[in-house]
Image (spheres, rainbow, N blue to C red):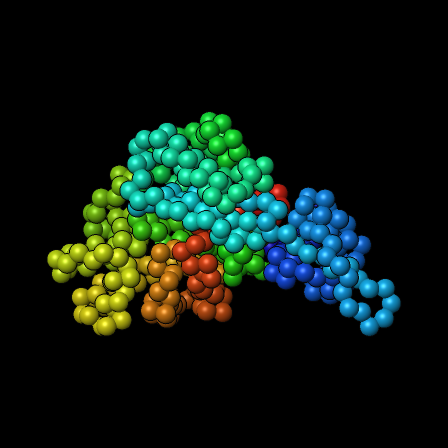
Length: 392
């Protein structure tokens, strides 16, 4: 097979340069143009052109001159994170979460609606709009400085038409979200939850330099995958790529909410741990935190449930590795806060001796954004032009 070199066009180079400059400014806050050039190895004229554009867009300003040992003192460029804002909304089984973030994705407001009624989507979106307006009022933010509302949904989403084909765990089918732009008077951006989490991890988290990865998002009632191939989010012909939650993983006859049997989510979602523990002991636990506290204390039933759970989680990850051949698998979602408990035993099960891959081929890692990956990904969607998400 002839391996052809990857061709990078000028548009891609310009996009990458802008991203690098912006991300460096977000991280360091104040830099001179020579300092930016040294940090990211981009020419001074290119940096100057990008900085002028950022200043024209209100995202940076000149902030005096720096100290210099000789010659002309360079101007300090200051990043302005509060120039623009974004709203992120996460649809989950047990809640709707709403956040307000600024350009460096600092969370400025965070609200949660428990027991959301997804069957009455009109009333739900009206409530979300009221909450968003309330946040703007509380934070004294004019709507003109808000670039839009990003929504993550656990299902098959067409982001181009803002149409949700199916989200079985929350009961949404064939829902058109475009009319709600009139309600919010803001652009609306939709994305699958695992894809949103993958975007956040690539832009903000551990995956900044990674080009081939699978972000595995463990949700309370599901498991999703955001797939990045050669630096681009892969969605498939019908926007269904990564719907691994509904791949068959066993043959026990368990009925899934999607109508199929023995889907992976029945064995690897976050709530599986609580459900299986109740089946074994008759006790109902209030949270995953309570379950993992029992595991830490080596409570026998919890340890057995946990080990069985890791078997199924590892089996699905092994399948993903063989199908997708990623360089990295990043684990996030509701179990990620308990990395110190599950990561090493899971790694042992994933990399059990086999003829196909090992730890040198594939790196298994945990998300640095933890359970915030999905909601931060949603809040990044309105910033798509700034962060060049359209090139992912």
